[in-house]
Length: 262
Image (tube, rainbow, N blue to C red; front, side, top):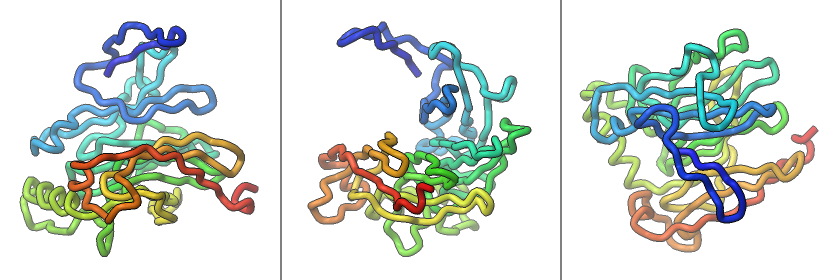
């Protein structure tokens, strides 16, 4: 991970390494003027099938350069198969998080939906979800929790196909190959903080190789969602075929009904 500071038009400071070597930054956000960063290490284990776990670190900073655990002494909030991770706080100070579990662990493959109480934010407890919400982004609209992430266009949409009798390495390989050859969408999902489950809401204009969302609030009930996708006018491509062709970045207006903005 490297950091560069904006000094003025066309003028940035020389990039510097920060935190620890080998980390991949995932999501940054500011909540009530407090900056947060989710970063993970060990991502190379997803594709070389090493048994070493991936560690997800939850960090904050005072100056943008030096990062430290949100909960002192507890940088690691997840260890296992998860990499890409995001979170939101609830009104009571607790949090809801989701992570992409492509490498697999004792809970299976796909994703995990996690929670932590306001009194112990460094202890994340998770349940398994067989779907894999790649490149996930979480946000709140009033009291509701939403997730934007990639959707697998198969009969069930599941990433974990339930081949539990096979060795872990073989399961990982089969699930990856099956996932690569099917079409995808970038989609909006609603997260139930009590049941820790996820419900499909809608697809954004998207096809083929797609879904790495960003979001900017425009009003009390509307947001700009930025996302990349294979051309949406062409035939529906598998994810791997989409990766071999061009992609474009789209700006999409997401507007919630007024009755959901009260």
